Amino acid sequence: GAGVSQSPSNKVTEKGKDVELRCDPISGHTALYWYRQRLGQGLEFLIYFQGNSAPDKSGLPSDRFSAERTGESVSTLTIQRTQQEDSAVYLCASSLSAGSSGYTFGSGTRLTVV
Amino acid sequence: ELKVEQNPLFLSMQEGKNYTIYCNYSTTSDRLYWYRQDPGKSLESLFVLLSNGAVKQEGRLMASLDTKARLSTLHITAAVHDLSATYFCAVDGRGSQGNLIFGKGTKLSVKP
View 1: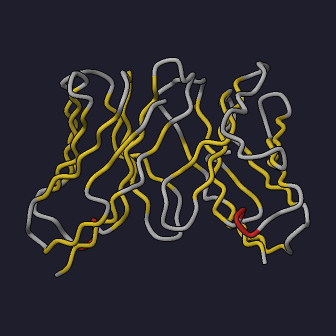
View 2 (view 1 turned 120 degrees about the vertical axis):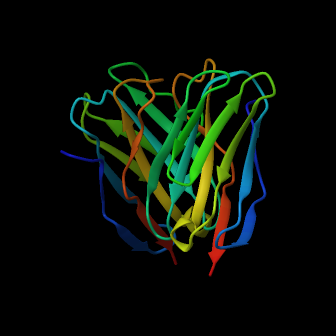
């Protein structure tokens, strides 16, 4: 597609439920990144994928967080047993390759845990 | 650990005035990025600075990079209300393999 597409745009879930967030990167972009942005804060790196290499999971805050990517296309970020502190906007970005200078961000998924 | 610090975090200025936002980072980096974020929106890329001494300008915004001082500046000239937004700098640290480390952002409010 023309841009990075994320769904849903908004998600309200009850504490303790699992959620899945989806990201469709720009076609041809081999690198895909997930970031979290809490209200009024900067972006925290969560995880990134580069082609078929093992993902860099160094930013995942706990084992409740996981992400998968199918080849060089769609990625899903899963949060299990959601907690209120998980409430944030989850942003996905893609680039032609890791370290390339052009990152394009999606519009994000606003997650609210009640 | 690479750290990125921006200041100020909040900036209220009048239209027509000039101001500079500063971005300091803690370790050597090859690239520095500036992004703009409007409330409830995603990030819009403004500038990518790739080398020491790089200067880029777009409209009323000018960004520069001093890799020796580990400092980038975003200069606003004759501010207008439309520039009101949050501005983030981000660094692509050497060995980071591509993930960006962001500053906390500078929330700019330009008042008529």
